[in-house]
Image (cartoon, rainbow, N blue to C red; front, side):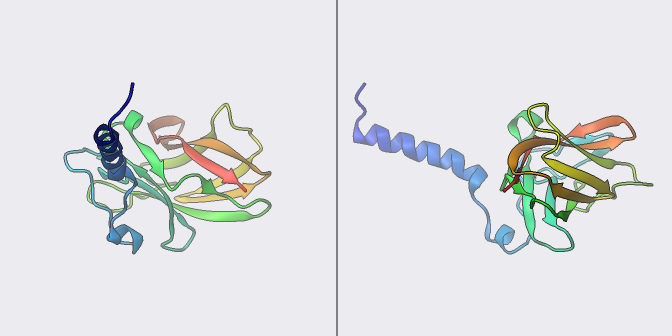
Length: 175
């Protein structure tokens, strides 16, 4: 099949517009401000708590406002994904990360002991178990890269042993 220049240009333009909705960033997001939620999208429901409708979870460098990765929520888990992944974890040293889970008003939800939810993170079956050593305290995720490689991890909100919500899979790399 031979495509005319007009059809080819139209197809490229349509694909670019579709992709731009998820890959573009607003000036506010680059300067550390709030990202705009997707209109008409409801945030994930965790028990009786509704999370922010767009970017309900963000991971920052510990004790800073440098955002490393964030979930872009598209109305359901199968359509949602992390932006800016893979997240790098250095090899051979512990590094702290601040995991912020936001409610629908944009306020961070307390996590950990004495809170309604706690964080859990685990490698998928395809990821080598000894890629990264992880410890969680409240909303702080401490990670130590054990050896170089790339893996996928399940980040979950839990209540004891009960998983209340699972985030899209997060790629983590030890460079």
